[in-house]
Length: 133
Image (cartoon, rainbow, N blue to C red; front, side, top):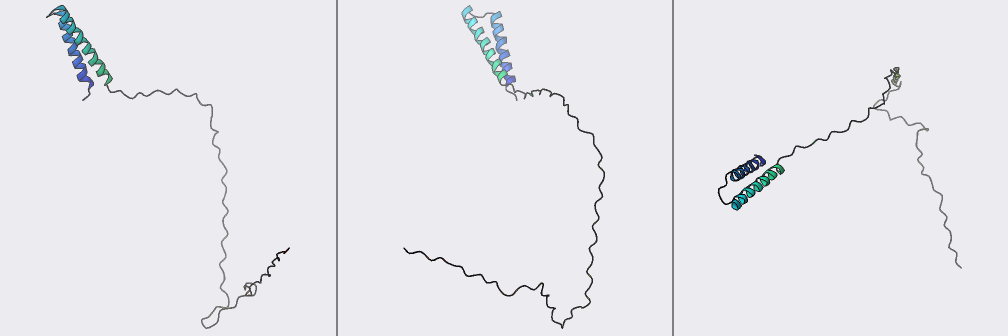
């Protein structure tokens, strides 16, 4: 339950009793006015506290409308369709006239594709002699 409603009710009761005491004095004038002022002040305090405890709704600040845009997108243009080149079919290798049989040794590679078997020799490195003075 919201806490501000009971505080408003208590403030209203304080104002009613203060008004009744002011209209129909039941004691000396000083004591009566002291009671009326006390109840009126209490009524104001309860009303202010009730107002402070009222749940506030979030305020949405309206945004200023922006200036209208002068930019207009260009009209869509149709681009000519490009035909994609059709890849040429890869030729299938023809079977060689001489087929390898199980009993024959494998063919020797041609000399053009044969790697060199001799390792390259590096020339000897020369070292300088230290000068002795």
